[in-house]
Image (tube, rainbow, N blue to C red; front, top):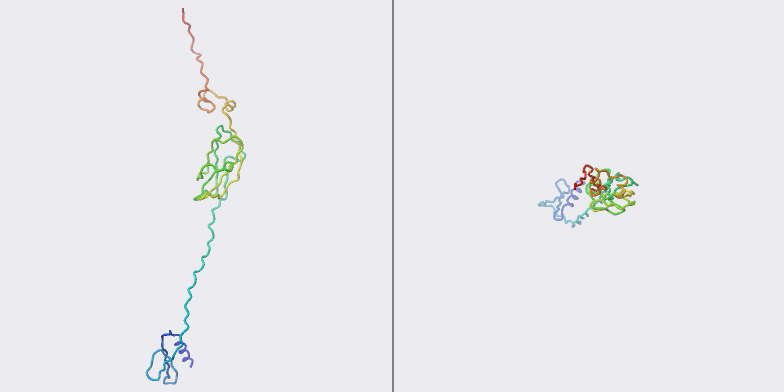
Length: 207
């Protein structure tokens, strides 16, 4: 009997278009089959199956990726001039040198700030040449910027004092010698004293 019921339920699981037949075999057992038999086999009418469409699963939401971290610098510093340094230069020139650890990353540049304003274009060199700086106290800083010009790192502003000594003051502090004329800026060749011709003796014409 158990085998008979099992066969019956298996046949029920067939597709809706399959036919089910039953008959009594020679041993008195009821048999279910999908193949018709001549004689005593009877066709069973099956109720239509309740088919359900398999739902299409929605795509899994994209897992948000963590934002790319901006490379960080352990150290960014100004090597020259030292904080509160006094610079003595008649033309007001100054070389600013900076340094970073680690070295500059790809796509980054150094930029110099003098009194809070950018000087020149950003570049890969940590050395900056300044010219004709006015007398007095100034603030200098160096920053690292990315390809979009955004500041990545920046040093604190540090002061320096520009002392522009005149040429006359330089000559007074260090008088010009004969060999200095045409060599030192404060000793132009035009200011070189004329040499006296001590070896020449004036000869008066005889009357």
